[in-house]
Amino acid sequence: MNIKPIRNDEDLHAAFKQLELVYHAQEGTQDADEMEILVTLIEAYENKHYPISVSDPVEAIRFRMEQQGLTPKDLEPYIGSSGRVSEVLNRRRRLSLKMVKRLHDGLHIPYESLLSAV
Image (cartoon, rainbow, N blue to C red; front, side, top):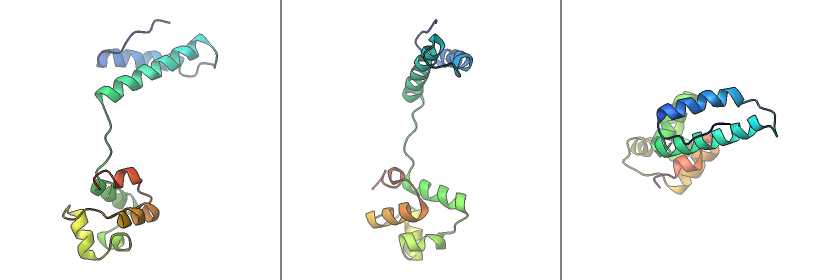
């Protein structure tokens, strides 16, 4: 086992190549230990250099609309009148907690995405 810190993308690429070699190692073996260490190092490097931020509520709603082929009219049961839906989608009105709950329950949009700007 020759493991070293991941300091740049070249090191990251090398770590991924090594991980491919030991990925299906049997538990309790030296290769399995190496796999676990590599995964930890890769995750730490990626979290530091390529963080994934929580999505914006409007983007989360638009993404779900695209996934399910929904129109703004389809959002009225969750947000309110067509004017209110338009205000939310155009960022002129913030989501209320009641809207957040309805969107989560009805369209299964994660709370963390809907509450990121509330």
